[in-house]
Image (cartoon, rainbow, N blue to C red; front, side, top):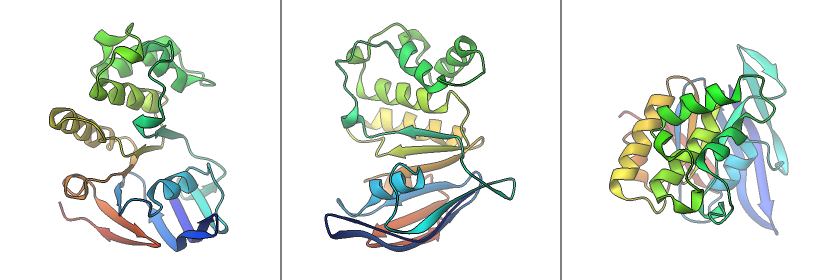
Amino acid sequence: MIELKNVSFSYDSNELLRDVNLTIARNDYWGIVGPNGCGKSTLLKIILRLIKPDSGEVIYRKEGKEVSALTMGYVPQSSQIDKMFPITVREVVALGLIGEKKSASDAVEEVMRQMDIYALADKPIGALSGGELQRTLMARAVVSRPDVLVLDEPDTYLDKKSVDTLYSLLSSLNSDCTVLVVSHNEPRIKEYASHIAYVEGTVNCCRNDR
């Protein structure tokens, strides 16, 4: 579904990624791990085509054919979210359907129930706990039923119960889409991911026997 060929990227003359080759298949569940500042988030943004590599290419495929785009659901680090912005849970989730033809109200209601945030629908995001906010952001990302769900350190600042809920939801969603998760918690992501990518300059990949 996604292939990176000889991808390299530098920031301010600092080489973060070097000659990365990576193949991600449909319904894979990838955990992306490595030390702080090694390029994990940069790798995600290259996969999403939010930034362009200095060299190499990112190829998307669907049903065996090369395509120009895939439907991507992206959950950024929670620290990037302005919790003071005056918007409700329902409104956040509906943002994931901008430009979609499917009935927004039906899809939003359905995914809020799936993520167990229906009772929070009219709450402002500033009133949510860390776990509730993370489930809201996941709902926004999956409401359009994307081909790929991408999460950047979704378990940061969550308590153990919220982390358990998060990874249980991701395992459930993985039956319908490919999942890519950057995590600082390597032991925990290994409990769930089918593949692990170790990022430190280059990327070393292995299948994970859970």
